[in-house]
Length: 231
Image (cartoon, rainbow, N blue to C red):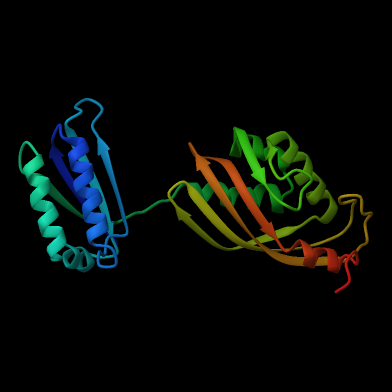
C-alpha cells in the first residue's frame, strides 16, 4: 500500500531549507526509497510550509528514515525551523489521477465515436498537437479537429487503450487501432482495405483538460497496408 508522509513546519529561511533538501536529494541518490516529493507554502502564512513525500510502502519509508544522510539532513532542517516539525503518516486509501479520465474520454468519444466536436470541451483554448504524420507538426485545436475528422471519416477506426500511465501533468497512452479505409485520406482515395496498428501518445494536461499532445503511430505500417508503400 502506498504510504505518504506529511511534514509540517514553520520557517522564514525558505532558501536555506531548499538548499538542505537539495543536499539530501544528492546525498541519497541511489539509496532513498521515496518516489515523489513536493513542498508547498501556506498562502495565508508565508512561514508555514508543508512537504509531502510519497513511498511505495510504510516499510520503504522506515528504511528511508534510517539512512544516515536522512538523519543528518533532518537535524539541519530542524535547526532552520521556528519549532520542531510535525509528522503525519498516511496510508493511501484512494489515489485518483483525474488527468487519465480526460485522455480515456478522448479515445472513447473522439476516436471510437467519431465525435471530433467533443474536443472543444476536452482541450484548452491554446491546445497544441505534435504529430509527424499530419500536415503540420505543431497544430492548434481547429486544425487538429479537421485532420481528426478526416481520419475518422476515412477509416471509422476503433481504438483500444492498452495501458495508461500518469506522472504529474503528463499522461502516456499505449494503444492499438483497427479500421477500414472507406474515405479519402491525405489525397489517397478509399481502397476498402482493412487496417490495424499501434501507437503511443503523451498528453500534457492543465486544469482537467488536454493542453498539448505528442503522437507516434505506425504510419509506415499503415501505408504498407494501404498499398502505398511496398512491404
